[in-house]
Length: 413
Image 1 (cartoon, rainbow, N blue to C red):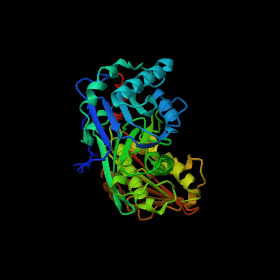
Image 2 (cartoon, helix red, strand yellow):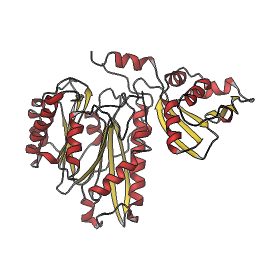
Image 3 (cartoon, rainbow, N blue to C red):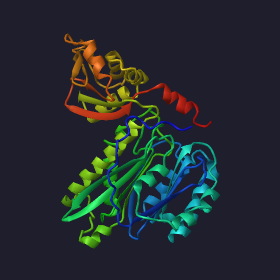
Image 4 (cartoon, rainbow, N blue to C red):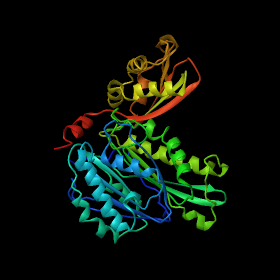
């Protein structure tokens, strides 16, 4: 079924620059969807380094297993992504599909199968026919180009209603480098070291162990701070590819993570991943509200994160947002059930700039009219002051509407 574009989608996309050393094309393999692209094939120049983070699910997909096994060598020449079938919980057939797909892609790319990275998204438990790739990757390889990235983002969508693309520039020493990222995700989003799927590309010259440290840190307050429904996917994959082409313009390759020249790149990567993660929250299945949950005054960042996630994942909080109901009692409930240090009589709660509760009871100045008016906005900020410490955290989610049930009730139909 098709779904209307989320009202929270960006009104326009920035011009996306070329990333030297990255070429890609998309195609229709008919894996699940008719009349739309469902395969992305990317080719990277020799010398491209790769790093990644993946789901912590105990039932990971076959492509996740493949990527984990090949990440250690740190080198990448190709990427194949399909939508419509997750190739997860598909047993030995799934592993064989991954091996055959990597062989097909390696022949088309002129590289070793271990330099091919794979990702799949869609229905769990359905076998994926590797011959779907045999028929299209050779032809797709003849059309490789340096853009547009919106096409790449569209090819990896499932129930997403809009493509997710973002870009940044940074300086490493005196050399400007570019970063471009794409992502997909709208449901089964409660990442644990990644998001549904996200692929990041840069021309920076950075060695793989340094890239790994950078991406592992960047996901903490971006993809891992995002939740749609509290369900962690079997397929969560974030891959960062660095072609090294900036060395041709004088960039000295970075070999240690504590190199001071990384400051600008690190900030750009963290900003890029945060924007993509927020796009995922804004495209939550059936979403009409983007909800930001801020927890302050907690005993530790980890405690603040668990409290914030308890609020963000509460169906009662999320349906209150959908109904534009300033029901702060549900926020109290979510704080109380989180299992983290909290004291009822120290709590304070805000919707936007309006404090609705303080010192364990309704704010004396509370106005139902003011709070209800605020809840009509499409971006809602819920802030909780725990009052026990100095740590804080922010997570991103959306409301829970009837459309979420409709989309997921029909997902395999």
